[in-house]
Length: 112
Image (cartoon, rainbow, N blue to C red):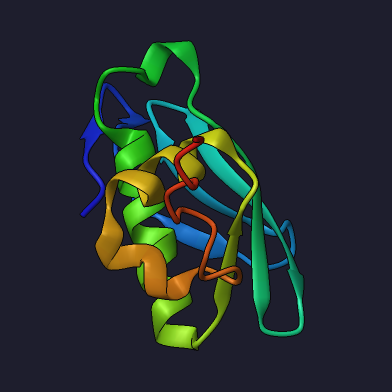
């Protein structure tokens, strides 16, 4: 639930702003966003931005977790073009079933 401090909104839930093609969270009048494009049943996460004033609060993690939960619920597949989404998904094999390319994180063959 949003909280007001000195008249400023300090926390809002993450929402999918369909018109702007981005997941967003407003905190202390700053917008943290994860932009995407949608083509059929594939969502490409293009860029994530957390303003300097909000860094270190776990907001990027919240955006990724919320967005991927939404993707799962909607039955979409993911192209993690954004380095934030790519790094998160690489470290969390439980998300690999969401990948549009199921072999994206397969180990490279050992060189002989």
